[in-house]
Structure formats: C-alpha cells, structure tokens
Image (tube, rainbow, N blue to C red; front, side, top):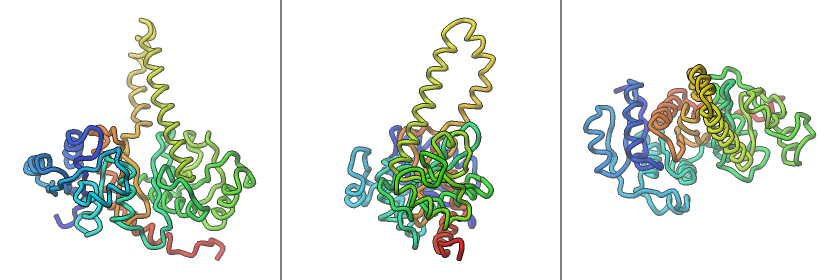
Length: 335
C-alpha cells in the first residue's frame, strides 16, 4: 500500500500480552484501512496471527524485556527483544512508529538510545491526555525527566502543544506552567525562573496553572517536571478509580439506589468513557525521531487498539517534523 502508515507493535509487552495485544491489533486494523502493522515477538505468537491478517507482518524476535528489569541495561543487553527491535525498525525507516505496553522505562530508554532525539531537543518528554470530564488536557512531562532545567520545560510546552493541536485536535492550545499559585512570583526558584522563560519564549503561554485547573480544563496544555507530573497523573487516576468504585458500592447498596443506578446507567457509561485512559491508549514520547506511544502495562484490547491508532495519527500528522521545526526557531518571541 503506497500511502500506508506502518506501526511496529511489541506483541510481548504488557501484563496481559500477547493475547490482548493481538486482539487490539486486529481491532486497529479493522478501523483504519491504510494501517499496516509489523508485529514484533516470538515466532509462535506473531506468525500465526500475521498469516491470518493481510496487513500484518511478522518480525520474529527472541528476547523479552520484563517489567522488573533495569530499563537502560535491558535495552543495551537485549538487542533482539521485541521492544528494542520495534524501535530499531523505526530508526531504519521500516516502520513510521512504535507502540508498546511493556516497561515504560525501557520504552523511554529505547526511544532515546535507539530511535534517537530530534536535533535541538534537549530532553524528550512523556506526555499524556488527562482524563478530564470537561475536555482533553495534555500534560507533560509525566515521567521521563525527574530533574529538569527551565529550558527543558519550554521545549516540553512546545512539543506538547504540537501534539495537542495535531493529534488531539485542540485548536490554538493554551499552555500553562503547573504551580502553587497564579502569580508569576509564586512557587520555587525553579518555578519562577521557568515562568519568566516561558513568558518570553512561548507565544501560547497563558500563565500558571494550579492543581484545580487540570480537571477543570482551564488550560489545554499543562507543563511540569517529570517527577511532579507523574505523581499528579497517578493521583488523578487513583482518585478517579476510587470514586467510581465507591459510587458503584453506594448505588448497589439498596433497592431504591439500584433503581437510580438503572436510570443513570447510560450517563455513567458516557462519563466513564470520557475519563478513561483507554481512549487514547497511551502516552507519546515527544522529541524522538518517529512516533513512540507507551501504553499502560495493564492495557486491555481496546487500549491497545487506540494506542496503535493514536500512534498512526501521530505519524500522519507529521508531529516529529513539526516539533523539529518548532525547536529550530529562535526562542525569544520578542526577536
């Protein structure tokens, strides 16, 4: 297929691999006609599947990076793992993007070491779509860089804004710095320095965002360091799960509440879909050459499907090329 989008997929990555990965890939192929998949994994897993799907191609690998392994060491030592080979296919131009629900640390290491950084990008960042019931909010970084410099966050905002607009479909996204107050002088010295730099270098900078602004979707892109972003993301996801679990318990507590649950069933399902992390299927590593989407280790088939499709959309939108152009521009918006 001349204009096909080719996505390499780690068949062995994830808590429920390879079964849910295969199911998800089959679903993705049925939803996008120009999609081709290179399935990386053990021969007894990928060959039978690919023989039954016209646009799926087997890439046999002999190693698997486990969740508990040291990420960088595993990437360096297991060169024939499904995860490393998938990234190498992108580097070699045989695939346009890569999806894995395997070790996040190993995906970050392989993305940086194997696929390589875009010229001018100081640090790739991991972005995600926050499950807001209002509208999508993109947050970066959520785990790739625990220790940051202000200039890193400027690039995180640039890259996340490109992703928000081109893939998520947010026109003219407003970017904000996560802080403990709205005023420019609030927060740590690091936060204050970052605020000043972002205000000088970003056309779409909208000021500081507080924690309460995230789910309220008062900004389209929220930028922070990877340590803070990861804690924030997991707090939101954990709170969401706890609230729905508690709500279900309450609704099933009596005959009357069960009747109410029946009446609310449709609305609750719609709300759950809005805030589900499965909707986009994973988090992109922005700033590497090519598209790399990292799925949850606990991804189900729908999440894998959406992750592969989001990876393909990232390729089709030319996100890497746009990021390359963005970081190459003069930084000072007043120039």
